[in-house]
Length: 450
Image (cartoon, rainbow, N blue to C red):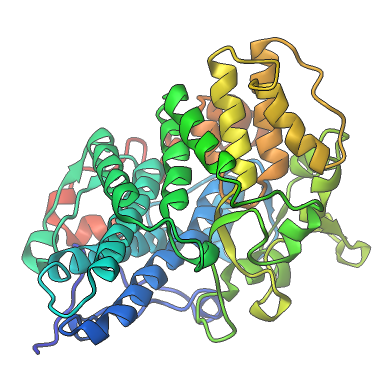
């Protein structure tokens, strides 16, 4: 077979220093020969390739969701992270380019499967149905992250190289409509089987994704409905001790998470950034929040070491991301606690505040696990503010904060108080400059302010 690059309008080869390559090895070009789907025997390897492609996105959702927010202070030497710490993001930021590239790598692999699997002989119908559902689901989730990170993005639906090199940005609403279509297909076709655990997608995984999707869309009824379906399935249970969430992969409440081993080239990224090198350290604002009486046991997300306290270093470190041998290197995509928080917010927005089916009840489930006092708020505005704080305590460094502030319209108020450099343009990442240079259809289509 002729070997040629399958760039999705040219997947960027990141220009990184040799020092940064220790943290973030540049992705190799993906070639057609790396994806073979000619026989039934090829299906398992292609399936693993699909999940591996998506997994690469998830570390960057933490970078986007938490490094762009009021959670961190810059404490290192790398320029890309200085931009996040000082809130001065540029179009040449390597992480901005990396996330874009990994999103479209996942979209490509999903499209490859969707184009070739239906006509492949010898594959059991159940296996074919499952993989087609997974391809739709992960393509949808990749595009969901893309639209909520960059805004309008190209809609890539083919593996044709010529087509993909010249695709303009589609409206965010159009991308999200395609996400919903992919999720709905996946919900119909994925299995209900839980034997593969949280490592692979099933119907509950899609329901969790739909709960988050509808929350972002402000469709409170649907957000409540899908969150309730996940909660009521009784497949997942809250860990009694919050430290289990911090220090263990695949806890009982995990719905979907991306696992790593010692042999994974890109698995050290978050550990090195947050723990080993401590390029980014918890901000004083976050430390105070996690140390509050409301947060209680959620303080376990970070820890203090006086020996690290020197110069501008406050001595605090994020604990969630160890090495593969530490047993807590995975990146959580969905877990049960988020479903309670989604349902609490959706219920509060509908005026369902008190009682067994009210927002306060859902918040108190998590407060009880954290050994904190029950909610005292009684009116809608106060309860919604409580939900925002609970998301801060419960989901810190799982990649939610910046996205939450943007979707609720709170980014300008919170972030301008946190950083004098904050600007409204930072509610979206820029389109990577390398992509604009390589894709003619993106010229003149940069996000405002960049």
